Image 1 (cartoon, rainbow, N blue to C red):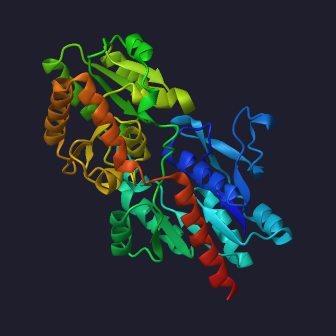
Image 2: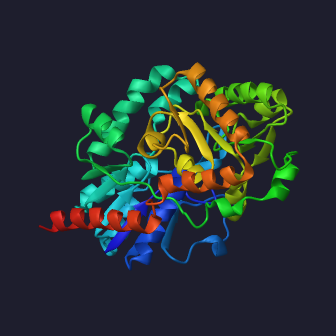
Length: 384
């Protein structure tokens, strides 16, 4: 097939959508499909940064307010119609619902090209965290209208399939998320890095990885860490990532390590060098970082939805907490930290291995093959 993937975020931008779309695109290419990647040009982008695996179409974009490191694409319907009229894709995958994604969907419909969309981000939930909560129902109505114009909408869990269908989204299908088990692995644990964090071998490292932003509910992670630290004074909290709340949280918590954004091997080393991952967000559609932590052998405390509900089923690998029960989250984090502290070094190694087993079947290649099958089905149905 010739597949056009339209996305308004792409590495080196660091977020779950960018990394998921990159993994799907690489997976399709590895299977022998031709991938045309349509995205906004990134600031200071050099030609050699482009991935030679894909045909890249770089279009105008603008910086996202309050997220200068992220961009969105400007409308490009006519440019895409001209391009796709001259060289027609078999199917479109539109990963983002911004101006570029919306006009790409319109161009595909005008040309009769089947398109599926990815429901990656709960933008309706974001509105209330940025002082415009009154827009929440309007944003959700837009998301429903956008996705219902496509032939299919792909989501990562059966829970989200059921929710969207109940909200009158049509043609919702499930595509599981994968995790790079070679990159994220317990063997990447680094005692030298833990020493940089101010830890001795038996001290507890508590970690959070992701955007440092209001919608991530990070004050709860800090509250849970404070409870842990009261019982284990040598424990240390590490925040990996960047975002609009970083400066304020760092100023209020000088004893917490803020590393900034990490990528690739360095990110994997940070995960594996921790002992407990706290994920207090209530605004995820999935939560890729949960899979990355589990693959790294790090136990997880998260609310009971998304990736945690789908894959955190072994109590030795972590705890799922009832949605929005902040006190229960703190209690679960403290209990998990206490259990870890009581384990011997040998028991900790065994626990890291068994934690990894929770995501052992989520290989990226298998997910890409399923994705290709879904796209091929759309293409064949349109052809018929």
